[in-house]
Length: 336
Image (cartoon, rainbow, N blue to C red):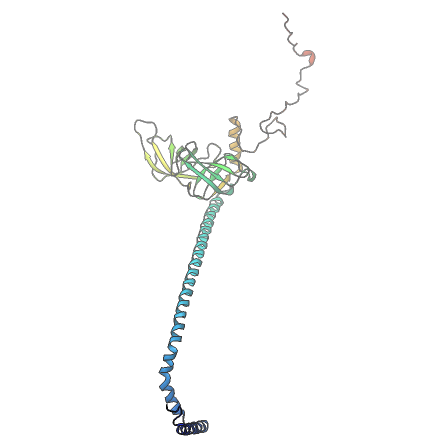
């Protein structure tokens, strides 16, 4: 068996020589930088080994960064998509508000052209059944709304109030089959009656002779007759004029100017004082109490008499009273 340290003396000698060489190189490098070039060459020689040893670590870090970056990008894209959705929804609200402001401006512009008192109301519901064309507005008798009150939008007449509750009111649209409106052709002044057909885009003009001067596109406005709608409000435009030989009147179809199925805001109109007085006078002459209209003083009635009650009989004038002794005798009771 060979000894473990066979050349112990030679090994010790080589160790001492290498230690002395190392000390000499350190002293030389510390004082005169003689081994800088050698160090650089050695670093260049071992650089590939360093990169090769560091490659697995760098590769792991790069993969982790890529995975983290992809997840972060996905999360960021998701957040941006949600933010875009929220902004789109808000933009739609802004568009709706802008459209609403435009409609209100149009309503106010339409009202400013006239002297009547008006009130802006919003539609709560619209019923466009062929047999019933009505709408509900969010203003009622507490705001002064009354039955028979005209209702318009920014483009034309919509209808009239048929029932006024405390906070809401029911509007009968001009397209309702039971609605009739006195109108006239703006170009010729021909008077007629506009009646609903149960369709939001068509009304009929009644009692127009076959020989009448009517053209497509003629503007139809309120005539002011009937004491309910003020005069000269736009109602419709003539869409078709069809003479019917052998019959007394032609078939005339008009298209309403008001957006009966699209309006969101409407105007409740109070006629001016002269037209209101004429409306009441017509109601008084006909012996009809106008529904929803404020009561007026009637000569001979008690100041505090409420509508629908009988006024107390006036006191006898002493100058015209018949004395008791001149009064005709009462009829005697007949006894069998």
